[in-house]
Length: 383
Ligand code: NAD
Ligand code: USQ
Image 1 (cartoon, protein in one colour):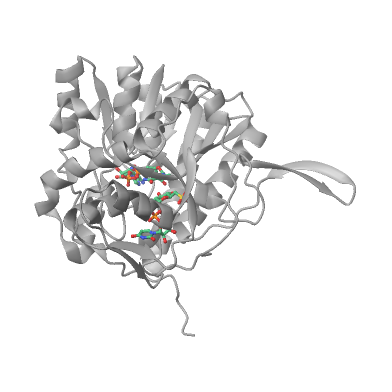
Image 2 (tube, helix red, strand yellow; image 1 turned 180 degrees about the vertical axis):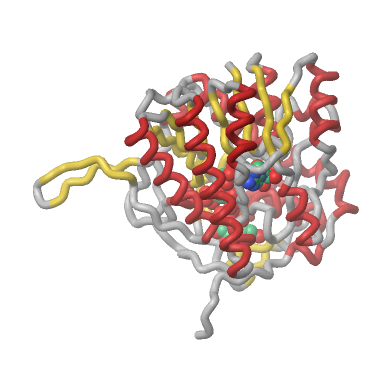
C-alpha cells in the first residue's frame, strides 16, 4: 500500500515510517519540523542524538534498499496538504502531526491557542483534502486515551451503548480530558466522526496510552536511525523520564500520591498497531475507534517497577502535583480491537526497562538536570 505518515520526523512517526517501509509498503513522510523548534524554545534536546530528516532517510535507503519520499511543510498550509495528497496518492494517511505535550498546551494562553489551532485546523485541512481528492483514503489518526479522562465507569472503544428513559442509542463515549492538548484531540475526534457520517470518509481513531521505549527493530539497525528520547518536564513522558532519572541517580518525580492510573504501551507495539490498522482499513462511512494501550498502571506502580529493575539504589519522591487530575480513581479500559487484528503485546517487564538503561548511560552527559523538574502549573486562578 502507499502510506503517507504525517509527523514522520517525530518520536513515533519516524519509527512507524520505517516499520511500514520494512513491511513492504511505499512510504512517504510529511513534517514541518516544528518539534525541533520546541526544543530550541524550551532549551532542551532529545537525550539520544537524532539526525536530520535527510540523513535519516538516506541512512534507511543504505541499510534497507528502500526509499522514503519526503515532504517538508505545514498541515496549516492547505495548498501544501492538497498538493502532497495529489502527488503521493496514498491509500492510507497516518496522522501523527500535532503538538502533543499536555504541559506545553498549559504554559499560557498563547501555547493553548497554538496547540488547538495547530492540531484542529491541521486535521480539518486534511479531512477536506481527503474528501475532495480521494474519499477512499483511509485516515489513521492518533488520538489519546486522555480524551476519556478517568470516568467512574468502564471505558469502551470510542462508542457507548446507552439506554435512557426506555430508549437505546449508540453514542460517542463521553469525554473528560485533562489539558488543552487532550481537548484538541477530542475536537479532532468529533470532526473526523462528522466527516465519516456526513461525507462517507473512512477513519480509524487510535486512542493511544502513554508510550515508552526508544528502540524498534528498524531503528536499532543503525545509529543514524535513532528516534528522539525526551526527558524534560514538558515533552518527557512518565516511564521514559523515570528510567532516565534512575540512571542519573536523581529521585523519581512522582506527582502527588502516584495513584493516578494510565494506559501504557511499548513503542514496538505502537508501530505494529499502526501497521495492523493500515492493513485492515475501516469501511467507507465508518468511524472506527481502538484503544491503543496494552496495560494500565498507576504512576506509583511505574516508579516501583523502574526502581526494582535498576541495579542500584533509587529514591522515589512525591512532588506536589503541578496538574489538576484525580489521584485515586476507578480505571478499567476495553482494549481488544487491536489484539483481535493480531497484536501480540510486549508487556512492561524488567528486561525492557533494563534494555533502556544502556541508552541512557551512553548519553547521560547530555542531560540538563534542571529540566527534569515540573514548572508548568495547571491552575490559572488564585485560590
Ligand atoms: P512528536 O512531537 O515527536 O511528533 C509529532 C511530529 O509532528 C513532529 O515531528 C512535528 O514536527 C510534526 N508536526 C506538528 N505539527 C505539525 C504541522 N502543523 N504540520 C506538519 N507537521 C507537524 O510526537 P509523538 O510523541 O511522536 O506523537 C505523535 C502523535 O501520537 C501525536 O499526535 C500524539 O498526540 C500521539 N500520541 C503520542 C503519545 C506519546 O506517548 N508520545 C501517546 C499517545 C498519543
Ligand atoms: N507524571 C508524574 N511524574 C512525571 C511525569 C508525569 O507523576 O515526572 C504523571 C502525570 O501527572 C500524569 C501521568 O504521569 O498523571 C502521565 O503523564 P505524561 O507526561 O507521561 O503523559 P501525558 O501528559 O498524559 O501525555 C502523554 C503524551 C501525549 C499522549 C498521552 C497519552 O505526551 O501525547 O496523548 O501521553 S494519555 O495519557 O493516555 O492521554
